[in-house]
Amino acid sequence: MTCDARRSDERGTRPPGRQGQRYYNNRGVSTVRLERGRQSRNIEDRRGGRGRRAAVGGGIGALLLALVAMFLGVDPAILTQGVKQVAPVQSSGVGSGGRSPAEDELAKFVSMVLADTEDTWTPIFRSGGQVYREPTLVLFSGSTQSACGFAKAAMGPFYCPADQKVYIDLQFYDDLQNRFGAPGDFAQAYVIAHEIGHHVQTQLGIADKVSRAQRRASKAQANQLQVLMELQADCLAGVWANHANRARSILERGDIEEGLNAAAAIGDDRLQRQSQGYVVPESFTHGSSAQRVHWFKQGLQYGDLQRCDTFAEGAR
Image (cartoon, rainbow, N blue to C red):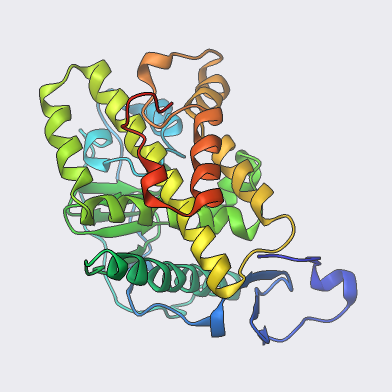
């Protein structure tokens, strides 16, 4: 997605907004090569409300939020018991609303990635005799309400199956780069593709089956099922990258490394080691760094949904 990316201040000039199929952000860094730079129509922009922040009460505290800050796909209702719910002002469409040019450029980039997932999963579903129902991506600042509960930026991006929407506060990408050491536009795209992977699971009925099994399982068993769900979403993100690259040549040198680095950065073992100094495998809900890298590479290499069966016997 990036190739020989340079900051504009290093060259003294800023490149135009688009050159051919390559898109540039406001810092003069080439971001993603996407077909005609199409943006998705399925963006719900709630940033105008500025996400009024709610106080965290009870025993959940900042430590728990920090532990799940990068846990993609988490149900916020589980994490926000005791949080006072305040619905922010909502608006539709991607607009400036007093935000910085950098933030609006990033919003456009996210919209383009979402559009590319639509262009990828629609024909994949069609080839299997199914219809892909496009999800909505919600941009918010600070906090917002979802059908799965109250959401805060500290939880990281997540997918809510109840309303089939992906939620993201764009400030998350600063954490991805600075706190977790996973910079790059393809790392950013991987985050969106992973959450869309959860939407694919919902469309295929996988999420519902797993949810029913979790309700009958012990806590440890439910965690393990959640790990398999997350690893499958990593694999599906790889499937997107495989198909999108074959159809539209979106990948450039260094992109795959960015994606693998992002997958490794958000492994449960690495996050737990960073936050508490030791690892508790029984509490994993997203998988280890090695597992996440493995399944993303699996999808990227083969581009085949059948290769993403993390629930199969013998699958790691």
